[in-house]
Length: 218
Ligand code: SAH
Image 1 (cartoon, helix red, strand yellow):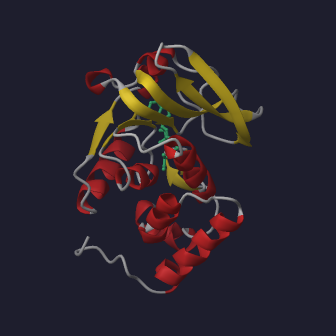
Image 2 (cartoon, rainbow, N blue to C red):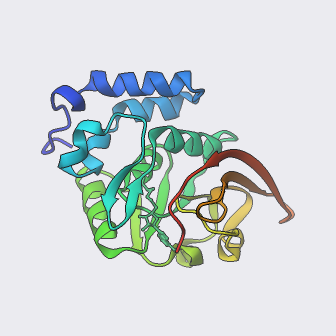
């Protein structure tokens, strides 16, 4: 990380980041490891310099190509839901976008595969994650609705764009005992965050969580 200016001043300082994380805690985020990683990770590096001054507001922001970096609360909440039953080893993320959610997970789990469908976003995130020192994150350019079969099965899958229905390929690539966190629902109608568990015998159970607003899974 040394070549990058991660210390910064003003809006990019540790104090600003601490304030954001304090707010997330007040909103109910409680997983100690998630809070620790969010305090450390420089979110401003994952967005355009023109928007960097807003990077520690708890809101989604544009990253170009009609896409957004997810709201910090949602990143924290989805991460918490993914790991609350124990830390998964091998994880798949669908929708790399800025790479911020990938970095949060990369700091927590042993091996992360992340799939993005828009080439410039894939390249940016891949290069940034490498510069930040992550060596356990593998970026792939592909349609994530197909999952990433080469490295399946995954202990956990996180989807950061919303499909109308849960893609069968992702259910197939989830390991027995694994968990998937995914927003599901049509655009412009209410989407819900769902947690899907695959039991040891392969049966699936689904829990509904909060209403969310994600860009569509294409
Ligand atoms: N996790 C991201 C959120 C990005 S928004 C972050 O932390 O910044 C969702 C991303 O999903 C966008 O970059 C979009 O291009 C990507 N996406 C949408 N449909 C996809 C698909 N079928 N396969 C892979 N990526 C997809």
